Length: 232
Image (cartoon, rainbow, N blue to C red):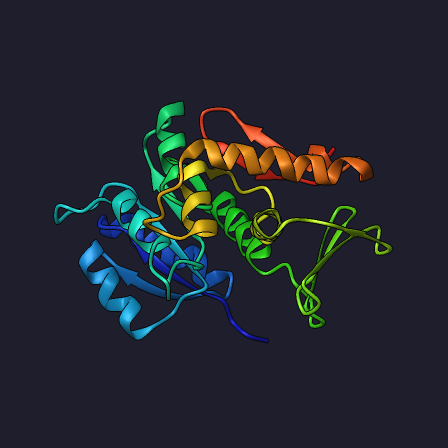
């Protein structure tokens, strides 16, 4: 069985040692870095399954700045990121999610909680099966046929932009995407498209799902953007 690997980016040696121990006990391969600079060097040698990233790091570049750059990197942008921070205010959580982080955990935390969060994020990052199909609730994405199905029998007809949007959502269920992230992922970084355009296509996507009573799968996240959830 393939062992999962984690790049641990934390400048405080005692915390890094504690996390290394907790992750190693769960059979993770752990790569370590104490700054954004050393994290970049580590990424040049290894491609981890997940990056565990402290918000406040030395060297003039914060973890949240690095998370933003990672999401825009063509070769590294799909690696899940969990941010670690002592900041617990709502606006800090929004900033973390808007940076592209897949999850956010505040210090102090228990190693057991962190490991559970890591497993949850990794499950969301790899939801597909060997046949190239991804199922979430009543929706199935057939990646090879480039089609969406409801209850495995009714084809869901979508425009090209709505298809890309639903594919992005279903491959990262429960993750909140900001409008700027959706613009970058669907239209491409540097495209001249307004945030309002995202809202228009979300509305069209919900309308396309409405005949199957699936429109509630597309959730509005106040102050952030949108997320996909098949939970009722």
